[in-house]
Length: 252
Image (cartoon, rainbow, N blue to C red; front, top):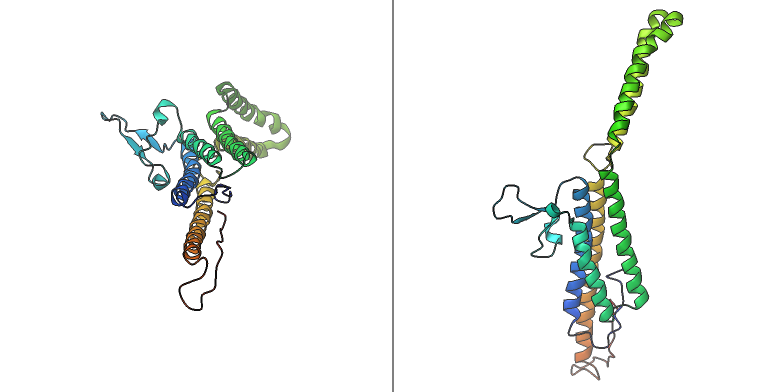
């Protein structure tokens, strides 16, 4: 939506290149939010002061360092995640675009709603990661499973005989297996095979977004070259055989 929003300014030639650069940076920051969210949920901090470092200089994650604004310093050590930090710049961009007339009020409002939805999703995922199963529940569950496994053979031995031993082993193995699976699903953002494949999801979004940005920049360059050519030969070309042109503007 940032790259497809239309421009309603009458004189946009002077600021077209800088505006396009701002839009490209905003799109890259949106992609950086996804990478930062993934790493934050895995406690793999994207920017943090070096532990034990006297200078306390920031260290950016190389996975998405090229997507971040230059000079950005992370404050994960102070409780502020990079995803929230980047949304501040996106909000500034939306406000700037509205003030310059790149899009109307409803469009700016819709982009703000989408940004808020992104922040809300980040908060929900962080809540999932930071809300473990209560310790009392875990202790009680393991005690009940242990007692059940101890007394189950005595309840089955009268009718099953020696078959009570393998049957008890199978039942206890199944119940403890379910308990182990529940422990794995408690944090679905890790590196295990049964966790959410966040690397593939984020990388797929990054590839698609970069292709869209490259195509948008290519069309923009073609548009600029067309407008320059038409403007220089409007009213008839000094070259023979070149007809008269009128200025054609391609919307961003």
